Length: 144
Picture 1 (cartoon, rainbow, N blue to C red):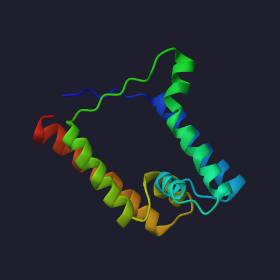
Picture 2: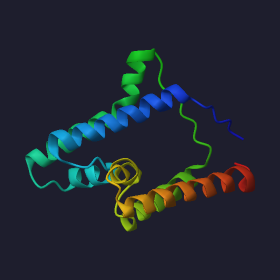
Picture 3: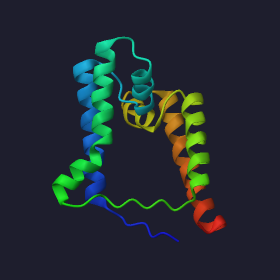
Picture 4: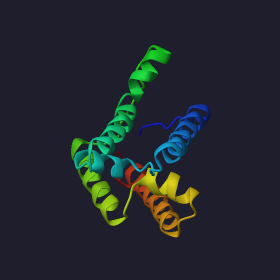
């Protein structure tokens, strides 16, 4: 079984950066920082200005590990306790959930909850409950 290491300072810093990015995106462009909405708009942009800010946000998300490398001298360690099949099924389920839930964890959890959106509050509670059930099943019932 994979051991989970509690990282309060890194988690706090990461959360603060996500919150700051969401506030800046709303303040500067008036846009909500939902990762799947940004990606969907990147693939089918309304025009150059729409595509450019979305590309910049996605580039920032993708380049995160390189920034960690520059700051610490080592790449972040990522352990995935599952098979490739589990990752594919999980990715498909997330895609379906994002479609039916009208947004992702960043859009609902960070931005929607900050606006006190009832839909986002219900969505976030659903994410958290589903996550807890999934972790329990994976760690205690399947033995992965």
